[in-house]
Image (cartoon, rainbow, N blue to C red; front, top):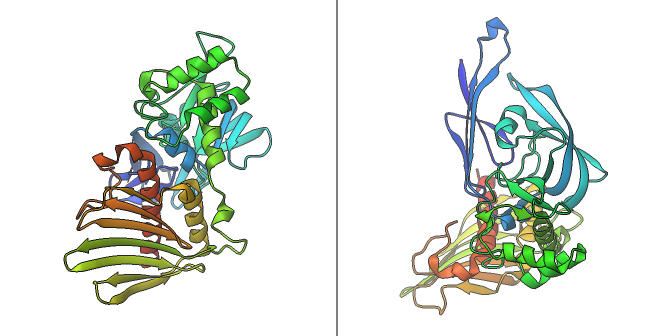
Length: 389
């Protein structure tokens, strides 16, 4: 008997008819095969092959999407087995001594991270006394958690060969794609405020100058000073909005939420809209230029409302520009609108242009803004679509 399983970006194990795991958000393609003996033989079921491929994930994206970010040294690595349906899964338990927590609710000086042992062997190679900086995703239903992007969120920390008093870091993608031409171009990072964070680390000006020089080169130019990653992470985490900005203590949205695609033309303006109230009740409405038609309705669970609120906060919805995109506005304009409690954010596209994770060329200077907007829009749209099934 042969079965196939796949792994998503946060360590989920999922059944599939074949290859699975292409997730545009973190650009991962994982292919996993399971060979199981006949039940009559009562033998252990074993994985005989696993391949994990990943494309780079940017530093900004990892900071925004990570549930926990920490620096730690591996104290020990142990293994155990847990049942999963008709399988036995080998679990790798990684025991860390922590030296710093940059994001999340980790308490104390130690933490244990559980991972699927086979996936961990090819995606997060570790041994005792290794020091790492991890941008860690949330746990799945098996309690597994992996660095975001598998390879991008795993930084090995070394002594800086140019100055043994300091450290450098390199991820499993050789720092590829953390940023493009420079850290401060097309991102949410501020050079002045990153320098303030570096000064707070109490390092000399000479070192700070070297760090800024490195930040102004492409990320794949070689190892990165650990202080740059720490300062950049602290800066952006400090800018993230709070869950309480969007969610009440009762687990309800603090205001209504609207997603709209609006198309203007010679015959007038048409639109497709999703309206979500504070309780999570929603409907989809089509406007043909003359009258509105409610097409479908549903309700989002409180768990989903919390996830939506977290997405709004992590992508800093409040600080998105009111309007951006294809300016000046021309005829037949296509508008993508996000609205929360009367606060409206509008992306203006060219006539007939579709929403895409691939940013249009004319938005180069707004890359981070575009990415944040699309992440929010597509996430909420997907949650509403799933609730209709």
